[in-house]
Image (cartoon, rainbow, N blue to C red):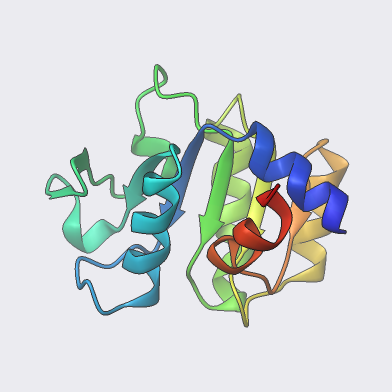
Length: 139
């Protein structure tokens, strides 16, 4: 798993953060800020904040609203596990450059993961890229 995570984080460039909060104390904001500090372009996705700006990027209502010219290759999911199938369906339908679905700590959905893998998309469940990054990308 360590090698797969290193490969995912080493090759991702644009990460859509689904369920990103505008509150700096929330984990989704901290993770997005961390990823941005490591050189990733972070695209915030939150229907309640659509049209606003977070971390210098426009917030989109859903994955389908992200313009085609933004080549999202990873989706980081900060939603409850039961919301994952909808996120995966949306990602598969609207993100042609998608390589990875990453479900945050406490988030997993086996059926949605299998569907994504069946489309050639890598899946990480119940992990945090902010925690994994220093572990796998150091040295």
